[in-house]
Image (cartoon, rainbow, N blue to C red; front, side):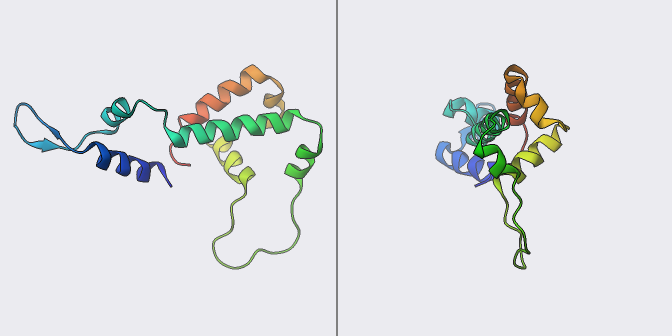
Length: 124
């Protein structure tokens, strides 16, 4: 589910509003819906948790880090390539122009700042 799909569902749940001046129905904008819902954006929460876990893995020295670096051999079938978890992490980091991810992840406070910035990106 994308952010747009989530917005459509919330807009349908909360319905239209009446404009007091024109006495006509209007669609609610995203900010109004978020105020009514009073919950964090689920897409942003998912991004934050994905990035937090990536930082945890990059700080570790165990098997998790080795598995993350492993690249399978061979070809994928024709069609849309399957996305891996790390592909989404790398895409988000590229959008905010972070190149030395493992070095930054060693500093927990700085990595938390990166996670917060990634939460603000559009799309999953």
